[in-house]
Length: 290
Image 1: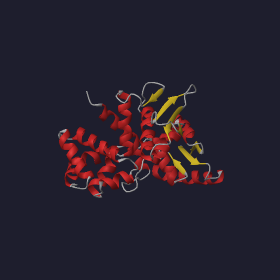
Image 2 (image 1 turned 180 degrees about the vertical axis):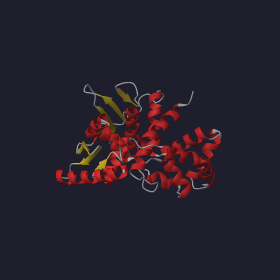
Image 3 (image 1 turned 45 degrees about the vertical axis):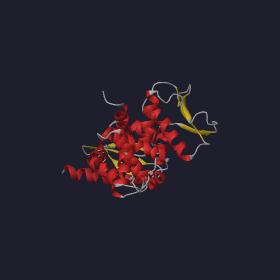
Image 4 (image 1 turned 90 degrees about the horizontal axis):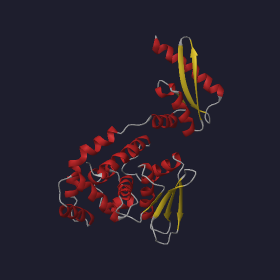
């Protein structure tokens, strides 16, 4: 049976990597913020900061209306707040059992999984690879740029080396400590070099969902046909898409033996402009048929 680390990081990759591709996020500019905001927006999650007086870092609950609420201690250091928010989001996205989640029991499996999830979202494999191996950044540069604490970065590197190499705990701690203290980067870079192909393969294999593709197309175009997005032929997809993108309109039209399914941004196009684009799309469809 695989360790929960692998299950959690796989789920995190499936959620995060397509988002990164969609938004062309690079190692030099990555932070967790845009992914977090996207998830709470699309899932209608409420996030509220309170002074919890250091009793707990945060908690999350599902109320009687089914709304998911994340609460974090706003008096904590920003690094701690970031980890807590991603940890609580992890409970939701990992479909954990229960309606109340707190960090009182750190040995609880769901709490451990939420920690793994938070660590990955804050410090993804592909971003650490770019920063350590390609950009030759110091330990200090990385935790500052990713908005995490030194201890969080140390723990994340420890997990990567523990679950992906045959090194023992003493060897791992020594390598990370040398890197953190600026004594030696060669060992940590050598390890990431050996892991490079697998990390890049995981990133390349990440697939954009039809909704991701729709969002990407809407960013660059204001009119889309089924030739670019075949899912527009499916009524169920269109209904769901209009809930996600309230300004989206979809329609289909039949002309001269051909059917065109299309969608458009109602904020950007008038009905007359849509009609004109439909005519051009039919002309293009007819030419491809011929």
